[in-house]
Image (cartoon, rainbow, N blue to C red):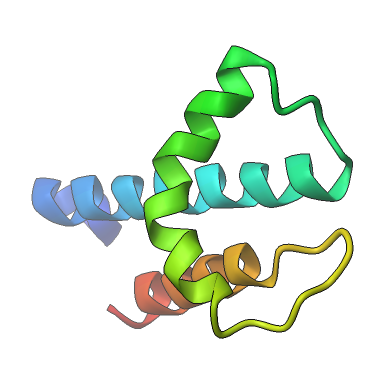
Length: 84
């Protein structure tokens, strides 16, 4: 077998990376399109992603609609997923 299907651990790690990337990008788009952050589902996403994004926001420039910390985390995770 080829690819990550031959190694269950590699498949699991790749799937987890993809899930985290998806969650971070959903958070980015919710903020970009000004979603209702009082929605319980959105609040859950915020609670999941805030521990990772808040420390980065201290060092990222402020923008109106774009959460650069979320984009940075997504890009770094994509690079790590491809590289590893």
